[in-house]
Length: 241
Image (cartoon, rainbow, N blue to C red; front, top):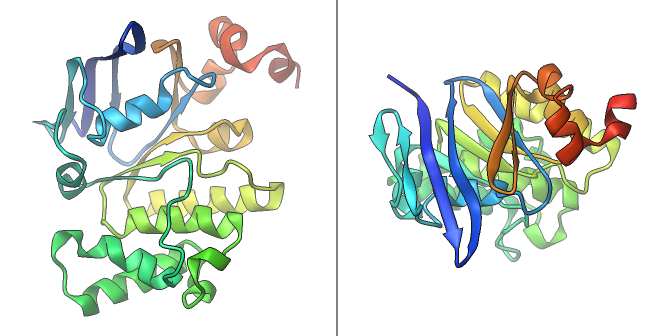
């Protein structure tokens, strides 16, 4: 059984092709990275997977079941969760309550949801902030909260959309450790990130897209040497370093 498989995925917005005939698979238990220039179609792929957009053509298979076109809440119940580039919290609710909200999607009892949320706060390094209102959290903690809320759904596949953006070097290293711990719990991760240190150190494989088309795929060290990737995204400065 294939864990996750995308075949010939295409999405147009008027005369613009945002995602063009993309095909790839995600293996259970791995971290797959997705990189490319701004506007390349990365977040559009996430939106197609999670039901925010409907593809014009192509198939999205999760555990051998077609999920393209399902509404977002139905995708979540299948076991796929995501974060957003802009952290979306309930500012006047506590950190703990923010995480608990996602736990109710599968009809769990409040006691079980709370216990699970506390475990997630420990995993994401937010346990000391559990009673703080979300509006008072730092940028780094809001990024962690975004991850924690997604984990509350108890996903098998977690999509991380630039959760490291805007962090300082120490916070980046802490975020890398958290993502590794999440993977070690058995959750498969598909992540978009522009911080090369993070994406290269975390990913088992990397896909590179440009103008909606996949231009490279492979292990991080292979992708970093690909001339098409250097020209379209990384630049010679990255290679020289």
